Length: 384
Ligand SMILES: Cc1ncc(COP(=O)(O)O)c(C=O)c1O
Image 1: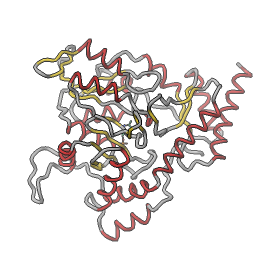
Image 2: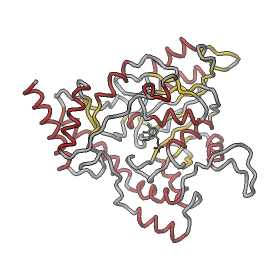
Image 3: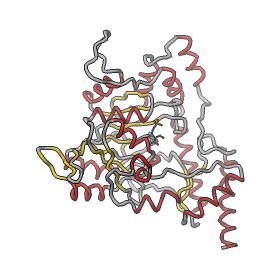
Image 4: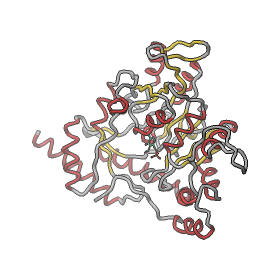
């Protein structure tokens, strides 16, 4: 089977893990954790990093860090992995789900503005969502698949409505917006995931990055049970969300190869794009002025009915093929969440077919994937 995306562990992972065992630094204190935080924040264009046990816990603590409280609303796109919405729920808040813009697959800033203007009023310095009576506490845009959201426009809207922005940048390490690294932007915090299917992995893990030293100190404090000093003095309800030195050891080895792995992701996507150029299949977006980290490759089919048949054929040819994210507003736990119209993501999600794109995918295997899809298309044309 040619898998969708498997980790590339061909660097010094074993050596660094052995070092953890030898030194007994296996828990959440250790040199690799600091090194990993420095490496990720530097690559992301931020000044500080706090490594977390996962991207989801990183998002949770980031939301708490910017002041999201129980009962609040957090603006976020419906077209994302459910972890984005779950992190909002873990903070006791409710996602206010907004559709994406068709050209970038990221949250539609014009729609965010329209929804705020239509539904909200500023009451005693708080942005209140009139239909629900809830405070709107933050914006949580997502750099979907590593494609940057329109951070420039979102920041303008956030400034007007005095909302902090936490960015779900789970798969976006290496992406840029307006020629600047993805966290070198006027947002409060950005959060990455390093689970097993990301471009680089720690096995599991995340990292919150930012430029505001006080806010980042608070995030760090919250991830470590809000403990003050070496004694057992805790000044608020914190979390046990730190990354371990074992995870960070793998992450540090991965960082050494990040440039090559990112280049491989981009090369693989562009090879698919070139192979299907001029066909009925559309490429994943790369909006102007933004460079995607190209986490996942794939195609957009004209009709959702094609997706099932194509998947069947791919599996038959030994190629992993599964469906893609069902939007959050269609998921049972979020059926009642406030939301905008959803025409774009509802028409899109069933037509997406992700394609194998491990950083170590061989050209021969990629050619096999391309042939399988080209054959399916040719067959469709002959019979249909
Ligand atoms: C967009 C998005 N947000 C959040 C997450 C959650 O990250 P983790 O699996 O590290 O908790 C993921 C993971 O794939 C993701 O793709």
